[in-house]
Length: 226
Image (cartoon, rainbow, N blue to C red; front, side):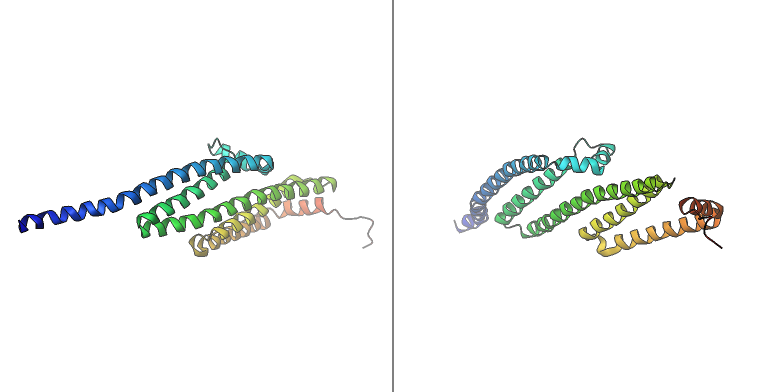
């Protein structure tokens, strides 16, 4: 009889652990279901709020929506922000559910991902507003050059726009804090290399062209006494 009880002891322990685990599993499932419903409602609310604030007009003028469509996406930037908000609520629900189940390692991993999502959202907003400002600055330079009768105003406007956009992307990547500064340093090295290569090519191979451009942009006044 005692040997039979010894054989049944592991089964009893398993049943006790299962009985203690099932209520926690049920609570975790309920938390995930409620979190999923809240995430859907929060996503819809965020998208409607952004559209009410004409955020989609800003992203369309900044060129972000066109960039997403060229990449094959059928969603605009407002919907992308809504999906980030949806992911934020879902991750919070998963953390609560796994914490209730006692899975601390999974909870720590999801907590790190949860902290990264707001950074991604802020970086996206930096790119959106920076793109709008870059296009505005480029158009301003183009308009000024046109009013000053500088023939290469469109080229200078594009240079201004791309320069501001490069700075904005660098700010966004720096906010994400990916790679411990390696990406920022690599980006700066590549940008400096492009600028130096362009300056050397333009200065050595196109000196006459550079002189013509300077003469065209800043013509000499023949009335000035020598």
